[in-house]
Length: 108
Image 1 (cartoon, rainbow, N blue to C red):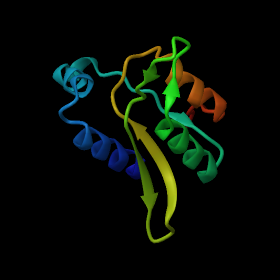
Image 2 (image 1 turned 180 degrees about the vertical axis):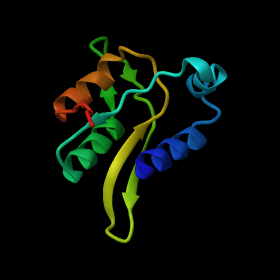
Image 3 (image 1 turned 45 degrees about the vertical axis):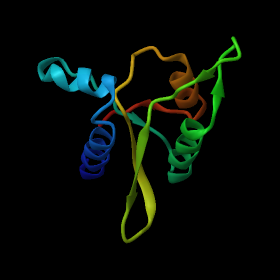
Image 4 (image 1 turned 90 degrees about the horizontal axis):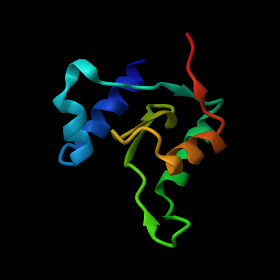
């Protein structure tokens, strides 16, 4: 959980001027966060690459996926989690990336 908090703090700091982040932080009592899990560090790397790749909508216009921060645990130098910047729920391009990576809701 410590890595999740580090990645979340990092992505919020890195995107502190984005409208979506400002909106998210403006209503602290109604924040909504979803924690997903994947099977491996490779899956985290694949999600990061997919979120960084150019995406084109059916209309031919480029889509902008939300920024993210991948947390690399040290001294192992392995990714342990990835945090997405606040974004609109239901973003189909984001959902497609996460579904393809096999993300599922985390259960303790």
